[in-house]
Length: 367
Image 1 (cartoon, rainbow, N blue to C red):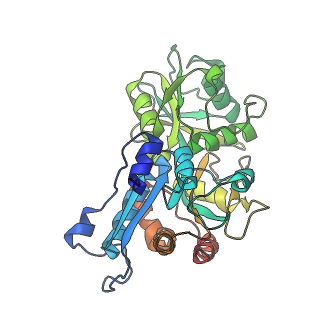
Image 2: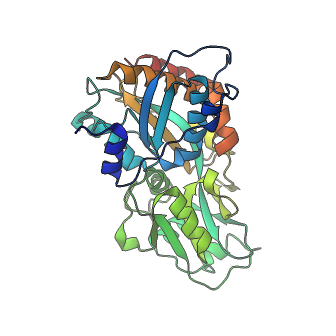
């Protein structure tokens, strides 16, 4: 018996697929996902996606808006993690993927992409958010740290909260004489890739393993599954520190990161600033809009630990129905309406008008 797309995701990811479905879509509510609430949609069918858990909150909002405007469409997004999402997409078990990094050019060349009619893909930034360095120390809400100190904490070189490297940057904070428990993602994670890319660029002498998605076992620390797992481990621990999409930071303490001579707190505006100051990667196809972030920027107001999460689809689909649904869903996500809706819910930074134009051109090329 042929497995359904959802069943394939469950088989590949080892977990049940989650249907992010808006109640409003089934209750005849206002068409918040459509600029023209009086328009009648001709779209129908099921659209399956999987990938980055960082996009989870935003995907809930996007699914709700899109399904309200297109009541005969069901969108299923499984927040299984970036690595699992890319694998699911490559195996043809999902029509699109969310990923906290773009496919590397050698990965695209190697393929295969079973649901695509060609070896070309379309990928673009859809969700821009700071990665917060979160911690749990009783009575402390904020810390200031530079890149070398962060690198030494997560590599296991700095093990105590009152270490001089931390204390010297926080003279007005009463730091405990207690052990640090550094929490990292246990699954292959684009969030880890972005976080370690920053460390590799800004603290090269102290972080020598480069940008990695799989955490080195020799660094120790505590592993946790997914964004929610890291946040839970930091929240429920004592003297813990971790990294997660800033929209999930909640009431945990957060770190202001040193940029130039200043310490910059995370914010959507600061995250958007570094994206606009960066350039597109060379050697990509016209529809492959991967960004090279300037992690060492010293521009005022820039927050360098930023997650640029991508949406990925086929340039040409084997199934024409998938092509139509993906184009429509992607277009809603990157629209001003879609981006603002996600910002209200998830706190991400909407993509700029200039980037939106480039992205829409890439989406329009899907067939």
